[in-house]
Length: 305
Ligand code: PMP
Image (cartoon, rainbow, N blue to C red; front, side, top):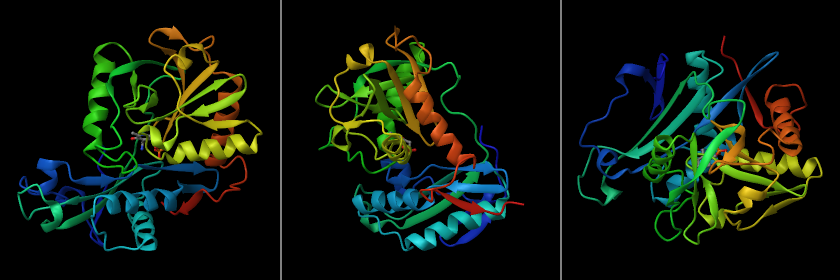
């Protein structure tokens, strides 16, 4: 369950959490016409920071643009709005959820006549994929969005109907998460995570053309891998490479860096977190926890107390 905070930002103003309601006849309720973000704060010894705020809010604007949804706020205004609500609520570490959607107006499918509403909420939130021993995952019988059906570079609410099918199927079959193939039958991503694997010391991930979200954690890991001198390859990957690779892991704001113990009950490597994953996991957490220099300017400080 969500732990409420005091305020939610709505169209430029802070309103009480319990008054952030919409009408049941709002366009979004019927047709899934929303775009959103998921952002985390991390605590350092001397305070708290938002991870890659600008990149998240840029993707928020991009998602809205794809769906012809005008957001009447600049990138700077959106960044400031996130900082305002986090500081007003005084809760950290937290998860931040900006959402924009087509509200109450017309009930036809065409969204263009319904008003755009923008909200930003934050609340305390913990680990997403459970267990430090690694995740037991499966390949889903559901494919990821085909590129000419739903644009996967938009982080749109409706995309998560596909994610829900993947996630539910995995769960009822005893897995913590499912990985979907794309429309070509090659690997895409988890229901809410990007996918990486390591074979022969090279780090592989699926390219943006394979129906994946342009994950900000994915980009962070690719950046850190290059810094560590780990060869990185973005190319279409066959399913069975997951069975014979040395290491595999998910990345995401919620999942952070979570290693895969098994795929379809086949052990990945020896099932433990391998050396490349361990090195990238450490490099990532050293930055977000303030143990290493923030050399890519990924952290935006916030005053929460
Ligand atoms: N793919 C999907 C489908 C997701 O929902 C997410 C989570 N936003 C990701 C990948 C990971 O993206 P990020 O690292 O930006 O959280």
